[in-house]
Length: 140
Image (cartoon, rainbow, N blue to C red; front, side, top):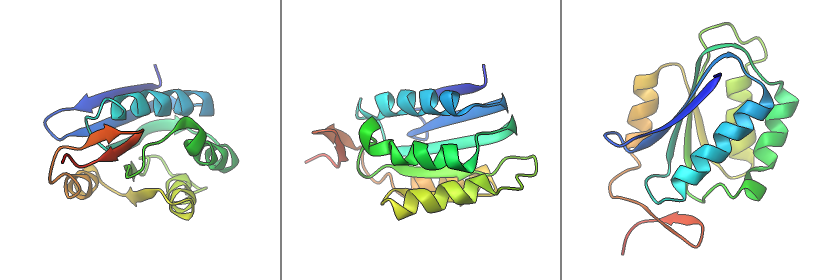
């Protein structure tokens, strides 16, 4: 399976892990799975780890994926930490993804290593977040 979506309770983050040849349909499926976990009120922090990908969607496909985030109901306040793949990514897709997300109001940052990405995500978890009306909010 080219993707896996897990909730890491110890770190309070959702981890999307990709390996091998990954299509845009598989990325979209993983995105929908992560949103479902978010809507349970567990966290607003998502780590995207494509380290072991050997082929990935095109920049155009990723652009339209981010365009669909509103339709997919990505919760407000979501923090997306995207690691760069180990293989050379000549299109710099991770940086492109970061830019497209930020231009649409999503808090996404690209990272070269997992430690920095997790540190950035943990900096956003001073309390447990709750989902209310489809958006993640701090408890009252």
